[in-house]
Length: 127
Image 1 (cartoon, rainbow, N blue to C red):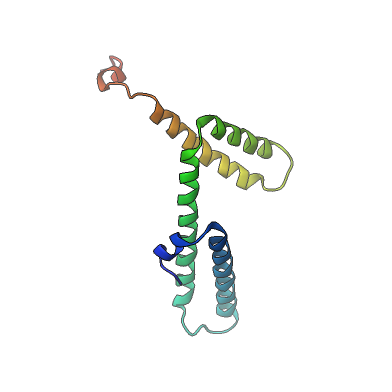
Image 2 (tube, helix red, strand yellow):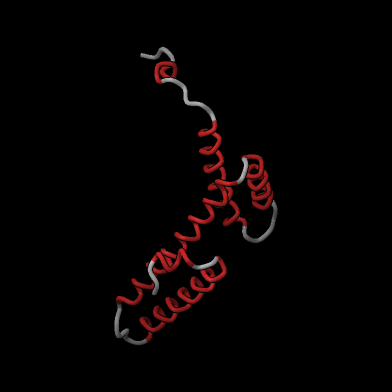
């Protein structure tokens, strides 16, 4: 499989296709492992690592895209995902996870936009 530099050079569509192919290959390896003997058992580990690399590059790109969005659009995306979670539609679990990630990202982005309070004021007189 390609290294991370090659993956970063791919487009989003190419990454998606590579991910599908690698997952299909991993399935075949697992099937082979269960029915026959694998010639090289380390191929399963390599395929898992390749999948992790691809998903990491995809997540990096998603974070760059989210960082460019204003907080209002993030709030809109969170609201639409929460509506999907509340409704009786398929994909509720994935929508819940994405909404939770977006909430954390939104809170971090909103927290970074506010000036930090001095350490003495943050203690508030508690001893």
